Amino acid sequence: MHPILGNGRRLLIYLLAWVLVGALLTVALREDGPWLITLAFLIPLCLVFGFVALSAGYICRAFPLDVRARIGNLIVVHLVAGTVAGGIWIALAAAWARAVDWLSNSTGGSALADSQALPLFMVAILLFWLAAVCHYLLLAFEASREAESRTLELSLTAREAELKALRAQIDPHFMFNSLHSISALTTSDPVAARRMCLLLADFLRDTLRLGSNQRIPFTEELQLVDQFLAIEQIRLGARLRVTQTLDAAVARCLVPPLILQPLVENAVLHGIAQLIEGGTISVVAQCAGPMLTITVTNPCDPDRQRSRGVGLGLELLRKRLTTQCGVTEGLRAVEAAGSFCATIHIPVVT
Amino acid sequence: MTGATGATSAPLRVIVVDDEELARRVLCEFLRAHADVTVVAECANGFEAVKAVSELAPDLLLLDVQMPKLDGFDVIDLIGNAVPVVFVTAFDSFALRAFEMHAVDYLMKPFGAERLTAALERARERIRSKLAQPLRAVVGAARAATAPVNRILIRDRSNVHVIPVEKIDYFESQDDYVAIWTGGRSYLKEETLGELERLLSPDRFIRIHRRYLLNITRLAKIEQSLTESRSAILQDGTELPISKSGYARLREIL
Image (cartoon, rainbow over all chains, first blue to last red; front, side):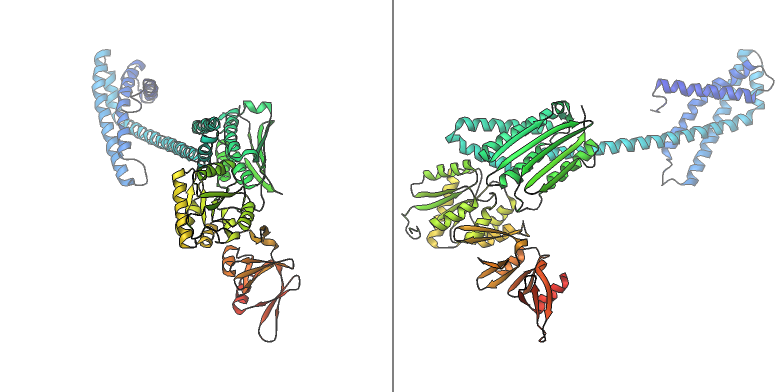
């Protein structure tokens, strides 16, 4: 279906434009005949020709103006199409002139049609070509819009893939160690074993659930982190200690999911678990004006062996903060004198 | 010393090493079911493990790989392959590859009692046949993932010294040992200079001679004597010989 025929409003505007063309032609072509007869002759003619001109759309689609287009072919096609359209218009004009004669009981219609045959023919060809140009513009506009929506779709798919990867990021090391702890507890402390099972289930469920959102309340992220730390505390015992300092205002903030959890996971894996005596992880979150600042600090062993691939998690988080919060310096990580500090600095969204 | 080697009825004296209390607990629980196994020590870190191995000379080590400060491979680096080992790990692709490559036994957390029994059986078999495990090779393969190393571990009886590589002036080969020179002192380590050269950063440590591996930052100047031979003068005045190929390597980096 032609895009203009398919939409009533568009069709009305289109036909009004042809009425305007008819009026202009009336001014241009009227000789000494009465206004009314000239109008009655030209306006219906233009309206009918409006539908003929729509056929230019099919020709434009069949012979698109792209890199492969052969200019010679295009010119020939449009010359022929224009001539045919002009012929149709003249034939229509002759027939309608007779009808106008009969209706007005005069010869004004056919007199006009006869005397202005050549100008009418030329005007028809020009109008048809104008319609073709408009159609080409419309096609180009459609193509660019399609390209835009395709790009958008692609970026959405990419983002979805990223989130999927994110959810798959649940550290296997963490999983197996937790299961081993549960296995150890089943005989010695069944109540604790069950509690750890439930904590682990909650953590997994929430990670999967939150990961599929664009933004989540910061309190939910904190809850996820609490679950994670509770599990690790069972495993690491007194070695893992945690302090939290939270501004009241941060509770209202919306953040991308899983931004704090990877930092805390790093703090445990590369910080506390690498220290014989363990240490304290401190989480501080505050809103200062338009910015939300989240800081995770933990002691670390400066002489630890660093295996390859460490830092990938931070890199991924940094990229996500760039794409989802529009900040280039959203994450800073500093290690000095046996202390590791990671800071997230993003605009407040509520 | 009551080694179990040979005697099938003698109890297997085992040391359990894991930094997590729960992980030690489950191992000991499984081991209690074996009347012919005695847990002689439980260690929560590598230092305790090295000390316990030195003092108790166990028949078998159940050794966790991921531990703070000294991991399982560091412990092997320090105690050598005197004691058969069953490694325990949660998930470490590098470690697993190293174990598979050299066919040493390992347990993956979480494991059941049957799996542990099978590992004990194989360990007994190994002890009976007096077949040494290729533990140095395992450590080498696992360390390839973390190279270059940033510290050298030295065992002095039951004590462990951790020396950061930047504190080391040079290494000197002495038969089966390597002398590690740092600030005028030296420590001996059972190791080859070639293996050290492979593990250390090639930007910092240069093999200037068949017997010497030099920390390049300690080099003050190169002296050429009349007889075409060259020597390196270190910042503290120490003089080390430079071989022809060693000089070529030095020139490349300087």
